[in-house]
Amino acid sequence: MRVIRATEPSTEGFPAFYRVVWDAHVAELSDLSVDERNRCMDVVVRVEHALRTALPEGLRPDKINLAALGNMVPHLHWHVIARYRWDSHFPSPVWAVAVHAAPQDRIAALQAALPAVEASMKQSLAVAGLR
Image: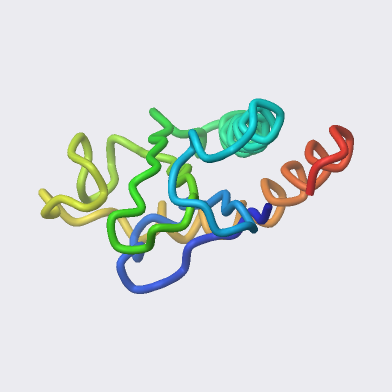
């Protein structure tokens, strides 16, 4: 299992957009054993928790979106996306049409804070024996 920050053009404007990717090729959560599902969801929750707690006050998300779509890539992965009232698509999904411009200073501040969040994620996963 891997945790990666999504940086492709479709995630631009959403710097705190992460994916939890299951290494083996399976299409659905129900393809996993109970233990594997528990481990997968534990990682998803730890990534969410790091986004909610490791960001400084003022940069903490208003909401975390979780999604397991896989319509285009039939490989099990979870999207863990920090959402803000100021983001360009709020309250719609990040895949919808933008409703306004996001403030670039907030996006930059969030990007600058993400290394600390990622360190928190790594520590939490290591403590739990996950990666």
